[in-house]
Image: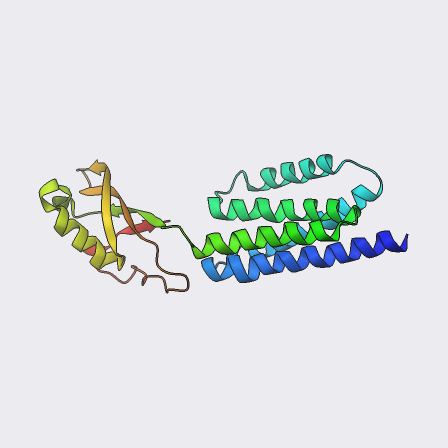
Length: 214
């Protein structure tokens, strides 16, 4: 009984420490978005304790994970959740399942290796080591005179000046001649980790205003 309780407590501590490490030192410094911090940590901690109790009464861990997966889908299906945050949410949900299973089997080495591998992989991916990332944004653009192929250089220069982004190329989508607007998708190199985001565009004159959507 003491050994089982000790494994449960140590597993809970390690699970929470890993979740904090991922959320606070890998996810948050990259996004600077606190909207999902509460969700990630609350999900992670609660799922671990519930699954720990489920495994102690010999209830299938797979059933427990399925219930929580269904619960998360029911909650987030009506809200558009970015792919990055959805990936982190899946990892945060999967971690306590993995840790609860390994803690109950008293396999400390596997527990440390599995958690270390997840943290290391996320850290490397967020730093972009060995990868070159190209970001994109959708823009509603009003100066449709520049969308002609002959004015592509002027179009890129105008977009760079307005957005403050190093725009490399642009794709032209829907054109609305009635409102003199066009839907553009701009592509640029993602700024280095820790770089400040470009200034907001709300202060621009009305004739030069455009809408940026992530």
